[in-house]
Image (cartoon, rainbow, N blue to C red):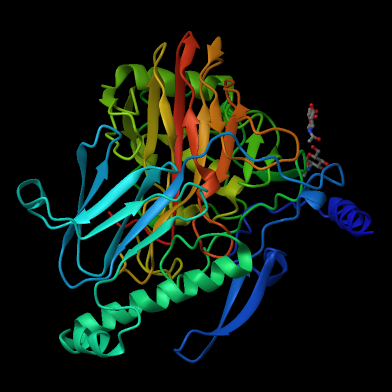
Length: 493
Ligand SMILES: *[C@@H]1O[C@H](CO)[C@@H](O)[C@H](O)[C@H]1NC(C)=O
Ligand SMILES: *[C@@H]1O[C@H](CO)[C@@H](O)[C@H](O)[C@H]1NC(C)=O
């Protein structure tokens, strides 16, 4: 019966998959486009009655359209971990390797936290800043073998079962320290409640508002949405002397309804481009857009990448059992204002994501006056080149915002633009996707002009641990790719 009900729900959703909305992006998200799996809960954590909308994971019966009733556990066991320093002094985080060697993972300030990616059975410690000499350990954090705990706390203030000493410790804090400590206690209690309700760890800092942007529904695998953009495909690229750096002021860049798009003579005929967005994973939400850039646009971008000075990109990593660099590609950053082709990429991406294009550039005071600042929420395009054997092992695109930052900014969405067909390998892998058939990774194959989209956030403002992904090694040939990162709600660097 339950199965039938979910199946009916999924099929009734089918009727609503076609959402046509060009240039009508609204912020914040309209009520009628709110995620149906958001559920309001009430609780009292000792700070009075509070309400919060939590995101409930979609049911496998619904998202497999009645085919499966159980999720197959992903083979990949790694996950996000976050360590909280609930003390009034700075500490250092070390990852202790299997051969017992400490790897410095950085300083964690008083009443702050640090996050990384790890594996069950790994070991971390919080220690004084002079640990290499003193060898004093404040707390040892063995990462839980079951892979279900991501949050680890160092709290020397609270002495379990000893109210008197706890009170004494609290009395020693300054008022500002006391407030910060309480904020951490509240976050910890909320995270415990959140986990009871949703089964998930809470990776942001409570109370974080929901993302301000729309998120495409992902009700079942192979669900499709379509969306139009006035930014039609370039069929010819204007000569270099016509293309140039964009210097207009914010309001001059706004396209009114009957303004033609830039270089319309060079584009495909027709007044709009119709893009199909196909759901390839529900949890995490991953989508493929088969045709996002034209051949000519891609060729222009690749030529630009080849003329730019691509630098080796390396990311050091601890807690990952490998000492090797986890990223071995070359990259460079390119701004939207570089020329009208790059500007078009942002405008089309804005339509695809249903986010107003003005949020992807510096804005005039009259544009989104309530937004926290006037800077772009889009990062520069990252052009990446992988040679044979180069890869980027599993990682998250989100970072952990400073606990003192009320806005809790982080990367919200990643749009990957594939610039060539790779002969073999080079797929984007989502090793922790949930489905009823396989524990193997989900692979998105590169193809010239194709795009893949995923979100680093869940609709309730928590970070999505399952968004962990990797660039598989290129086995034959080479790979060109663009990363376009969108932040919520602001860029904090
Ligand atoms: C989705 O569509 C593809 C291609 O049409 C097909 O091979 C695949 O089995 C479908 N997957 C699901 C879960 O329906
Ligand atoms: C876009 O394409 C879909 C099918 O892929 C079609 O159903 C829809 O009507 C098209 N929309 C427009 C505005 O052309």
